Image (cartoon, rainbow over all chains, first blue to last red; front, side, top):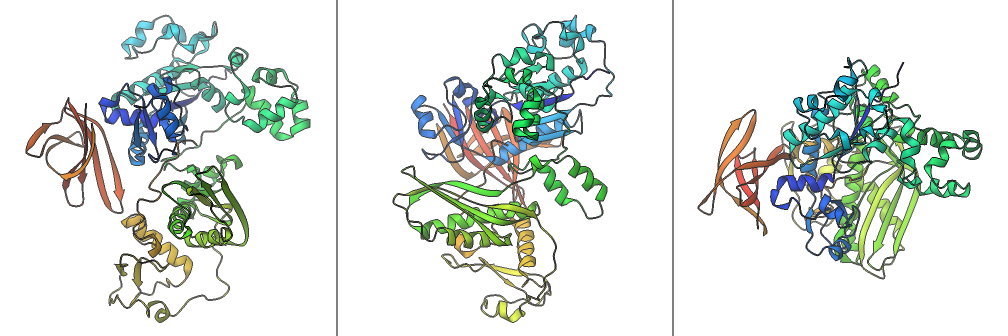
Length: 520
Length: 81
């Protein structure tokens, strides 16, 4: 039985920048960068194809990009815009297969059904005209990598090619004419990724395992997906400096030296991995895995679905941390001014973590100064945390002895040592009498079953809730901290983030605005 | 020139193919004919849903916003060369 390539990777080219150029046609053909913040020391989260041609890359600092091309158009990211385009593109994918894994906001793996009735390859290979009749006039088969290896054409599945070409065409026609993508097709995700990277922008490439020696001639280890600097260093000590050397390297040696990771590496570089494509429905722009969120959202009685979902998630996919960072839009050494930033970042991280059903047993705090110095500390805890305020309080303990001899420009804070949230009952009753909660919140009165609330006065600077809850005749046991958090989450889900918030966060809506992960 | 605006406008729209499309709008007593909707997207702030339209009239780009809660239109950005 032939092992035909059935995994597609659709990689949107310069995604955020292309979406901006799609929105405004006057920016097309011009060097453009998208940034989380327009501050000089912020970095580009996307560079347009035109900017890339000048040497401006994703991740480059704003002032460096300006040095290369002073007239570069710089735009602040609009996450909702990119999420919508991502959603529409993924809708197109689902017309062809339900096996779609949204690897990141601009990359999705598709597994095409192997039961498709394949047509005679020769019929398509010998007649370019037939492709044109199908509307794939933009495919240039003569110069495509599709036929980079001789005689492989007869093994290509034309239906998969047609699907890939049609997806490219539909994205341009149905979502935006300026949006291009590079599609790679291979027998597993690694090969599909390698194929997609071979022709950018706007490529369509199939590769087979047999192509690897040829492809690796122009590749370095660090060019390969999943091989980082660590591996490069370790392999370098063995005299392995190129992927081609791994192809012929005795796998037993790698296993002896590195154990299972050594075998995994050899298997990957040889294109021998077997992948399952994890289904997902939406991408929320966070780096955390989507499958886990879906699993958390399943009702308790959907055990079978839950198991099916879990099978696709490897330990590689488990989130290791939930955190947020922000390049400040102001500069200061004053800790009091930085506190609301930490709390806001902590609340955002905590919301994401709770949504995915985790608690944390460690935290970290990191601060970078304008003079290049940075301070970082993490701390393991003997208890678990799940709220932003808990993280905030622990972060303040961490930085108690920190002194800043230059302005702070960047703060990162987050949870680590994650564990699934267990619904453990409280050993002791922690309920507080209603009167204890409400006696100092005289602003509110209610006599019905609904929660009524009133916004905190401007300038509130304590940690009381920005909206005072009055439980009145309600019997919601909101004095239980977990229930209170859950209820606040529900209200914020309905009325918008930070509708109920700490008083410390009053007038901080421009701190750490909505952002989007531009990697995985 | 890129300009951030945030002003109320009057808009004529058509409902077509399950979509809402601005056709023309009145801003500062001048009528702008939408030649192309380049991109449309939406966002939520709590239960309020906003619809955004990146449109152009041949010489200008505009970003318009429809507030589904109070059924109002705003012009948020303009750009011309």
